[in-house]
Image (cartoon, rainbow, N blue to C red):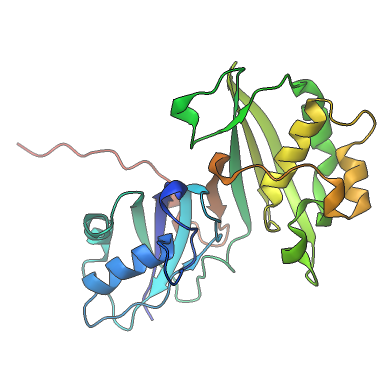
Length: 269
């Protein structure tokens, strides 16, 4: 069957998460409704996705895919057609045809998330739904030292939502974690792993901030990991600071094309 991958950007504050909801607006439901209207008589499969985001979580580069019974002759124009149908909050940034066996979730080797922290004694109305407001003094250098101890394949049970992790494998390979200071007021945590537990990024960053502001004198990220108990970690930060940044598919280099900037092309005279 023909198989197409989409790159999607969305503002999570407009949606109740990615997954279809019975009575609430979701990213998946919005896109599938548009596809149903466009692909008349060539009904697509449900959208598969690299990562199911929760209510309020944003995406800068989410990959999803769908299959159709017959080839779509105008598939390269689908982003414009979909964007003309959907309401505010979501846009398809690109499309590429992929092999039939490609699956945006199961073919994905790793995922990159960014968590934005606004660091200032006073709030910013422009960052209200874009970053977590940190109003207390933070030892950023201590946080950078702590980050190194959680790299590699570890049991991240302490940093996952307890109810969601019950009875499931909680080992993940955390491949990289970094902290970038964009300016004195904006800090970006970037975390890449082969997969994430429910709320894992929000709990990891929340715990790092708790350590950085001196909540505990002697406890470390490594000691919290060894406890294997969610109650030992810090708070779960709100979703509005979290962004799905990128999905990685080493076996499918055509996906890299989706992440190339689409600049306007001048019209020929």
